[in-house]
Length: 434
View (tube, rainbow, N blue to C red):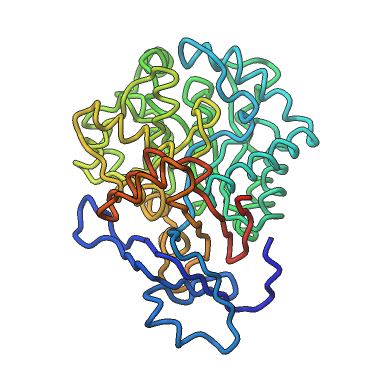
């Protein structure tokens, strides 16, 4: 941890951040090969060329020298499950048996606050080790799991969102709750917008919620419009068929959520693989967002997300690791798989676009532009230091790179946690690679 008590800190490195989506705007990014990031009281004061900003620093300001490295905003992971940390890499032939055989038994343990806090501590440290400074996180049905997550997050002063999972049918008795959402209401009062915590109303997915519970979640969302809503939709074919049998009067799986008042800005839907054209248009029209989770989709064989179709209607898209069906906490590894999924669907994701999706694109998906996601003056100083020479192979490849795109592409395709030299939250160093 940094012991520097000065109010102004400065960091010299190459700087990369975005002010627009590179898929739809020219010159969407800012790149300062010899840059300076200036932070005051946990917020960005300025970001630009070293030669232009160095003279503006207060006398005596220490400049941390990261030359040869790249500073970017911290990664934002929009879909993952902290209780599934210990079951990552569990074998299963499909989503539904994976839930039954691994997920539900694992989540049962989180009624124990000591266990929940132990896992939350490890989970957050692992995120920071991988350069993720904000995440939209599923807890379990237990209030204890939510308290443990936010207590551990607050101790690190992280901007994190999470919430109690809602399930009142089609799950084991030991995880079943009701359509009475007083626990969620209590947790919203306790945590939402306290410090850097943000609450997410969290139905696991339509098959494990009755219409009464989904309706209650919609009412709570209307009463608390600055909260998030997070759930899963259209992940596997079997899941879609199951939803159709449970909600036969709805046109589509996604429309189940719209019908119950769960589609709005600050709604995040994981997967979205089997959406049709009407569904994609509904995403765009409501301002809801998609979390593309390629490592878990490939791991479970769920299908290939169509980023080009989402782009065609300008739907909000971001990236999620989806641990524990996802196989890595690393957003770089998630970019790697997202690139390959796009190729298999006949489209192409440039490296600049992938880094946008993991930073400003995710902030926009969460309605947090101006708070996190880039280095605009006044934003919270969550940032990471990327090392293009972190491994012998990366060093060899980036030494032969002719452009920023090639360097970023190498980091995305060849990088992992080792490429994260340091992670900062609100201007304080919270991880350093040793």
